[in-house]
Image (cartoon, rainbow, N blue to C red; front, top):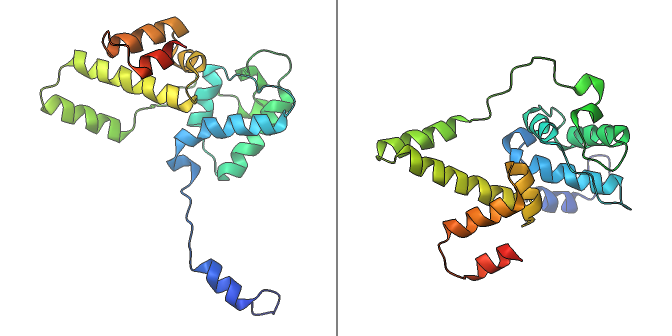
Amino acid sequence: VAHGRFRGDLYYRIASVPCRLPPLRDRPEDILPLVRHFLEELRPREDPPELDPAVCEYLLRREYPGNVRDLKQLVARISYRHVGPGPITVGDLPPDERPGAGAEEADWREPAFDACLRRALARGIGLKEIGRLTAEAAIRIAIGDEDGNLRRAAQRLGVTDRALQMRRAAGRGNGTGAEEKELLV
């Protein structure tokens, strides 16, 4: 604006609507969908390869100092190393990105998770109910993250498609609601 290369009135219109996007470290739920998106961009003529659970865990644990740009560059490096029809495995990670041998697994629990458990225990909720509710939440999140694809959700959860269908159906009772019908399609 000061050098006359940009209209001042337009600048002030744009500047009146600030848009602050939190860093990637504050929104880990965006990491895997972004990875899939970048893989689709890099391989437009083919389905993007699945991610091995160890690779998913690594991507979720890793720091991204360059935010989404850093993630995109990492996905490109992984994609160029991946060959064949199988899933992307730890072997496809660039050598400087591979987790060190014998490295301790990062603690995936956040303080908020422990705080929720403390509240549940303080209210007298037993371990069986906590486990059931946690499993239901994990199933709901996995299915949501996979856009309703039960096969991929089951793979992320480490169960079979059928086991996931049966567990969800049992959790809803014996009714024939629309959600159950959708689940079995």
